[in-house]
Amino acid sequence: MALVVRGALKTYDWGVVDGLAPWVGDTVGQPQAELWYGAHPGGPSPLVTPDGVATGEFLETGRFGGDVPILLKFLAAARPLSVQVHPMAELAASGYKAQVAGTESQSVYADRSEKTEMLIALEPFEVFAGWREPTECVSFLRALQAAVEDFDPSAAIAAIVQGDYPSAIPFLLDSNAVSAIAALGPAAQFIGLPQAEVNAYSLVATQYPEDRGALITPLLSFRCLQAGQALYVPAGIPHSYIQGVGIEVMTSSDNVIRLGLTSKPIFIDHALQALDPETQPQFIDAEIGEEISPAGAPFRAQLFGQGAEELPSGNFRIVLSIQGRATITCMGEETVLLPGMANVIGATEPEAVVRAEGLTAVVHAVPRADR
Image (cartoon, rainbow, N blue to C red; front, side, top):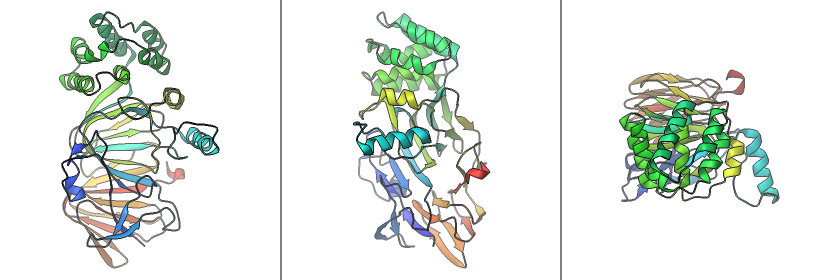
């Protein structure tokens, strides 16, 4: 049977103060970073009655007689999230197994699953994702070298010229020139990057003035997503979300391996092992109402503001109310969702119809055979 849930709140320090209040329903004067809609043990969604009252239960895998393969989130970032990479399935499984067996003493892997995700902007959202063009990387690092006497990126540049971005990263992280971080914004300005990008580097330098992970960001592409546009990030791609509000669709995993821009532990060797130099992110220039279906993705999504959409049976589905009301009709019964409430519909449950009276997100799991 379809279930109604609310999000599990995460108050990470990079969140926007009361940034998720429209969906949490409360202001607390503290950062609100993420709301999780799913069954991941790190933040299972609380079940609620149709009028929004908590039942004391939580969404669990197996409740439908099957898996809960998708984790859907609201995301509100006031400052850059960590430079990070998500492990592919084989590495996640082997790494987690080693932790459980005690042969890996560090807690690197949160679970045994691959994390693949997509960010959909609800307002302008700035990101670093994937590798920057080699010539632009070299120009950026040379500009930093000219600005800071004791910063020598020659070894990193040699690796980049060969197309070996992962090998460049240790050279940058081992640099003694923390002062190069403060020069990120001026260097970006000097090589003629757009002002929004210059501002992003200045924000990184201001927020993380002694974090050498900041020196990885010149290797990453910058993009500002507009409302409705999306970024698909398969496992293995380095990225850092800078600032903005959006929703994230992902496989049910919290596997994050960090390289910098964080107060949390970083695991450089594990992150380098997880990088996939051959894969790039997909930037999807969608508008509200258009389906977002990245090539090879295990999910597809759609934001729409008015009208009705059919939800065929056979795939796991989540319907999230973002603004206004959404009404789901299934087997003659109606469920009304207010902002911040979601309807979770298992793959074996019948087809349904959602009618939106405001901005609504619909997410479908995509079977492997259909990717």
